[in-house]
Length: 305
Ligand code: PPE
Image (cartoon, rainbow, N blue to C red):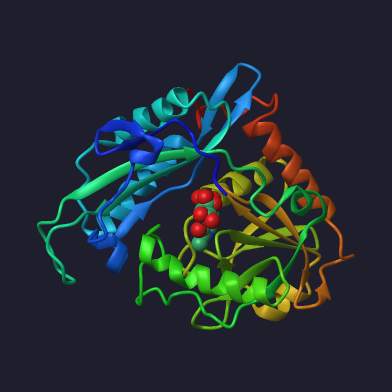
């Protein structure tokens, strides 16, 4: 359950948490067209900072561009609203969820004159897959659901309706007793988790699916590629097959919510030793140092609240 905070920003004003409601004829509720983001703010020694806020808002507007939605607020306004939402709720750490969606008015698929609405809500979100998952790693399952083909949907959009694919895959994995799903793309290559990008480590080299595949262009993925290269590790953006995944020395997920979550088993096959691998551990430590620790090598990624 999400703990209630004080206030939510809806269409330009802050309203009490319980008053932030939308009508049942909200177009996006029926048809799923809408853009959203997930952003984390961390408490650092010198105060709360939002991690890579600019890049997340850029992606929010990219999703709007891809889906032909015209937000009524600018990027600068959305950035300020994100910070203000944290301030007004007195949150030192939290998860921000901006959303641009189609409101009520006409029904039917087209409905071009329905208002384009906007919200930003913040809540406290601990480790996405649990504290234990960060420390010990998780058990994942290849999904029977394929990731959207690049021309079936919009892989580079963080679009609301697209997430039924993720929800179906996640529920299938959980009902089967696993922690998370890994989806292959429509051609059979490894794509991503239900809400995470995926990396494998083989003979000391990191590999992750390339951007022309059906993956979301994850901001944590980019963070990890940057940090890994700075640490002297080789990173390849490439196609990965199912058997390469099973035979990897290490596997981990990346995402704003999931942060760096090690994967210790896939389809009942232990990954490496079946524990968290040494490179995964190093990357995880560096990541947490950069987002909430004392590492100041990437202050350009931090927005002070
Ligand atoms: N792939 C998918 C499908 C995805 O949803 C996410 C984020 C990522 C990759 C990683 O992207 P990034 O956060 O930029 O590194 N998933 C968000 C939603 C999770 C949820 O359950 O809601 C997130 O991590 O915030």
